[in-house]
Image (cartoon, rainbow, N blue to C red; front, side):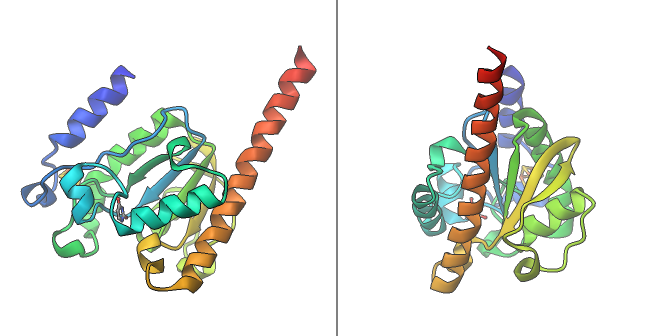
Length: 203
Ligand code: URA
Ligand code: SF4
């Protein structure tokens, strides 16, 4: 917990890339530190920058609704982004900015040690697949499949899906995200009952 608080403070005061100049608030991320599912988006948008919290704008509302629908309420997952400060005008984060910010995501993964990591969108998908040494051939090819992977020394199941912002005006993408997150929710429940089963066997 102390280490997590230090990490959050560091992010809030960070000046390691030029994005600090234009941000109102850095957005470290939020959720239970023992969450078994971690969602990784791209970068904060306008609302997130104003509030210092991830996924609180329109895309966030859609994400909340989908999470609720698949039986994995938002408060049960840890949510963060690849880049912690808002790129001006919501442009894509640049490779240098991603590189500068990556140690924070690494420390979050090391601290939370999630069992499942969900990459939301192509930027996050490419980054996490590459971090795991997996080939990335685009979001529409890679989405929806859980893969065993090792990300920053943590053994996880890794899955990519579309970014909820892309689905705001595209019901087809929304259905895909829902299917993909339903896969995650089911996998989490199965792992959970296996864990319980093992404990019951033990006692
Ligand atoms: N889009 C993201 O990728 N992250 C947020 O936190 C909000 C919108
Ligand atoms: Fe620091 Fe990341 Fe914000 Fe850049 S985006 S200033 S590296 S916290």
